[in-house]
Length: 53
Image (tube, rainbow, N blue to C red):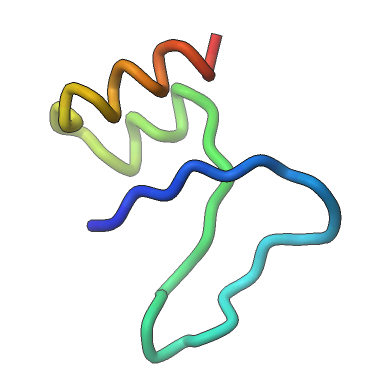
């Protein structure tokens, strides 16, 4: 699994290379927990706790 923090600037998120990425999703806390039902790496969790208030 790969985590990437992004900020929406313009346009619509989409998969540009289907052989490399299966999907793109913008997630709030609840949706993220459904995708990743196990603990995240602590620095990742700290970042998300700060940004997804």
